[in-house]
Length: 406
Image (cartoon, rainbow, N blue to C red; front, side):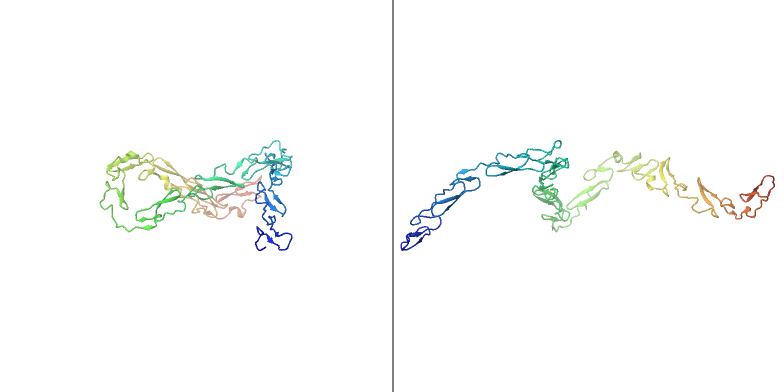
């Protein structure tokens, strides 16, 4: 054993019949033979050696001593119909059918009138035909696709997700429907204006500020650009940093308001008013019932009618149509408001005045006269019936009697 005759990890055994005890996978007097060294197992098979011979462990779909024989895939070419799932066996296949379908190849369709769309499966529930929809579809016949309405904005890509959808937004956009852009969060400060420049944004800063988001202030020497009164014809100068603009009065135009125009050419007077040019300005002569610089208001716009009266233009002015018991030019008077009827008399509005309905025993315009009841002393004799008329009474006599008191 001094010469180490055993190869490949074999153990030398002195004074034994077999000199070398070989490790698994090797054989021979000196363990020089490796039967798996030539890779006899084909098609991904695994080689093992038992000391005498080798054996191949084949992957699914192959067989033979060296895994050289391919097994036929019984699921090709897709024998299961109507979206059934094929299950491969050694010599055959089985079909796992969607709800409602039956038969060896899921070829038996249970419905006769309902047609399910987008891969939906028809089944019967208590004799009623219904559709079982694939994920992402809905509706009586699975006709509704969550992405059909193109919900993803700004170039986003819609993907059906269960009964809903998800949007893969284009660069620079975000949000459930990709509606938000880099300017949505308002990154520009200090009055800066944001513009989308995908995949980011750009801020236009006002005078006095700089930086990506207008966050930096700039110290500038103050200059009054309007000090030279550049605007003509009474226009107002509006400073904007190192520049200015002129707000022209009516009757002038142009950058500096130097060009005179006919103020009445733009027809400023409303509601039939007549325009008259006065220098660079104008005046409006309003039609009856209207007022204001441009005759834009009518007299009823002031709501002159009180107590919910209705105003309408009429003649040279307006007219108030009064509700209920109210009277007067502005519906300001209720003749019964002062309760003129005494002694519980009832006040009634008659045109613009009132009338009192007096309680029995009282009379006069305001029911202030009377106060006694003439019939109270029973002046009518011989069963005559007493009636009151104003402050007096009269007797209705029984047959055979007459006279003031019967």
